[in-house]
Image 1 (tube, rainbow, N blue to C red):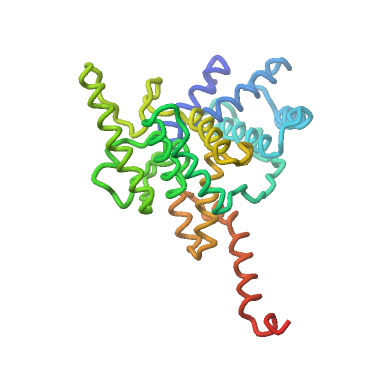
Image 2: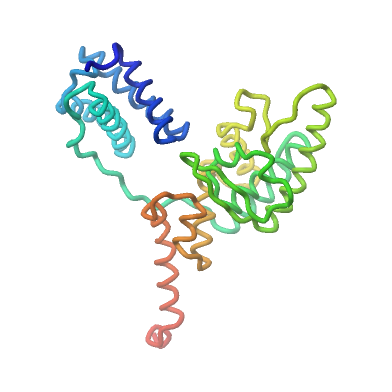
Length: 313
């Protein structure tokens, strides 16, 4: 059995299968698509179609990526995309082998996540209350920041929350994460209060839209764009504006930084690593273990504060 007649069909068929069979998230599929299109473009310039590329060709491509200045993390991700495409092609009978299966990636440096201290988070939460052109914008921004820090949600999970999930003054939110997996995250009192204030404003705004003949939004943070809700890119820009208002360098603050702060502060306060894994929605606890540097510091301080020889010293 031969494969599809073009590289675009190879990629689109592969992505469709990832979405249908594995429930791959939209952002994951977009990343696969970008990586594979770059790989195909390199092969086209070299006069080598997908069905003929060898292990040596793929290694040459990865070397070229390194020469272009791409990080080891990016090169490792591209190799993963290529490996999965060829595994799919092998399973479908498009090729007799997977030429990428034995290639060792460049490895990914295990870096500590950038985070914020409690004073910086408090400044951001305060700044959100005064950031925005209108009173409605300011209420929305306050709710967004409170929910982000209170739950550690991924930005896509946050901006796409359905309004139904927030009804009834919930003490926990049902969040749909990567691959459609659901989890419950508890809400601290400040986040619940901000949510209720925003819901009252949401209802008033949607009532006004309904009076004009427009259907109400099903999203907690609606937008007039194609997605129907605030986009992750707009929220990324918004959090930079809030950082400036808080007197914090915008280069230091991203939605993911707040997610890291959520996990770091919980662990520093004594939370169990397994519980943090569940709250963050990590499929593998090894992903959560990047936060153990906080636990190491806490244990060191515990010894310094309580060990008799340390006290005598």
